[in-house]
Image (cartoon, one colour):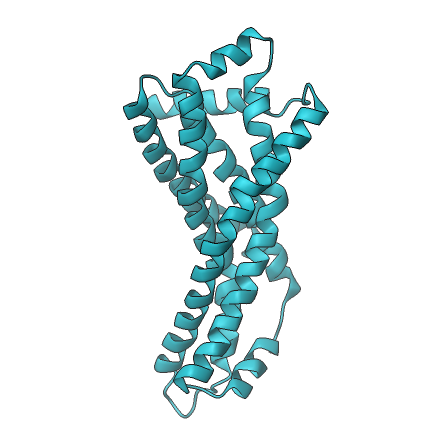
Length: 246
């Protein structure tokens, strides 16, 4: 019952969040600010992790494909499929849930405990729409580009791993990249990314907006936000995979 109550409050919150902005100029200013805070400031960590994850996938595949009967081009094929289907959209979304989710929950939670949200309500402003809707729009617009960059850098990382370690020939790797390319898998990854982006923007916002207490509770709310965002992403990943790839 406790969890059902929170789920109900979450969807009631979304009803207020997804309303038409009261002032489009203010919304545009907030959107550009959120694009920087939630998007561009996350590019570094995503690029770093993606590059080395792709390298690790390629090296581990090369170490396990040691039979002369197994073609070496499977290393490139596995790296491509792994990055596109799972590692870029899901693993990177979990990383973003930790970095961005904690920021959203703590920033909105701080506004709650310092009564800034109460001040917005007194002025007749829909605080949920004002604070959260720009975050949703920013993540939905920017995160697909982030995940596409993650896919590219992961594949580049796998290619560079072959050059550095000499575990496989780069010609075989490139052939495996071109082998049996299915554009639908990229569309599948983008659908997952959009769903995960919405979760990353809204679940931490819910925990921050309804926090009660002082600064200590804001910290606890940030922790809960990251945990629950990651759990929701993993659960949705399972259901989306069943629906879109079965």
